[in-house]
Length: 309
Image: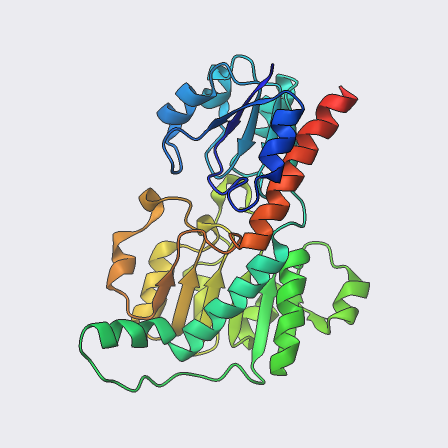
């Protein structure tokens, strides 16, 4: 009987069918022993003796893989692979797969929520009330704004489709443009520089850059429009923290939101002192519907892999 370590805590949580299918095919399931994102030492201990891991946001690097003495397959519970050492997996002939297109609608929905919160300062108004302050907070409209989407995959295009309902002009950038889809969703193809100069709202939907290089720093923020809104549901490394904080404090950035942090350890303490910054715990992909789809897809990837091999 093959053993499956599940690190993703929402796997099978809202619909038990995925777990039942695994058990029906003779797999033994071991849940995350910590009930949260594991650190390197915890993950290294948990993965020993496991044939398969259904991987959430834990870092599966070379040190952890070296402890995975029986590991044969990684079913990534999500689409990002920057938390996996793919070269080491391939060197050891360990298979892997992602749950493609399962959470794109959830993340696109959440992105619109963050944009509206940042523009209208909904969270800030709530916190003011909790502190006994009855203050009318002045926000900005989303209607007819110019939005810049960096990364035009399923999530980015989903955001573009939703922004059309607000009569927004949408500029988009991608390394490889899908011209037909850009036309379909009324996305005007643009360079990064054009987005920085023209967009009222900029939202990121791309993987981490090689070496965790930042895409947006002080230079890029200085080129942006006054009162720009900056949204990151991708990866923390894409925006330099110092530049982001300086931009918010100087009021160059009207408001910013980030759902990119993978753990409490990644949260800069300075963020907590910013009124115009929204921070959530990598929550965008975690809708009930998306969790069920990802659970089913994670199991399907396991069954397909071992059927072929």
